[in-house]
Image (cartoon, rainbow, N blue to C red):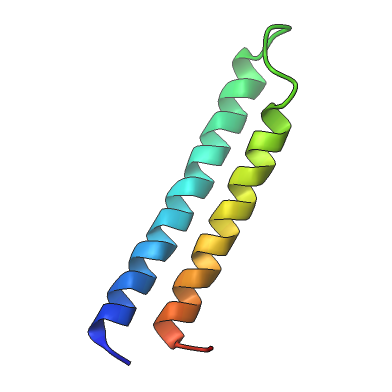
Length: 68
């Protein structure tokens, strides 16, 4: 396992964590200040963000462990 695999894995995990943080922040903002003008498609955007965060974290773990 090379050092670059570990570095890339850590970067992918960090990006997944940041994406999840952004989803939680957007959810809380929508919950507190959402009104009738809020798009009904925000739930799809939040769900997509969670899926992307999950795949980034899994890709980071797989890259670090080279389990492929």
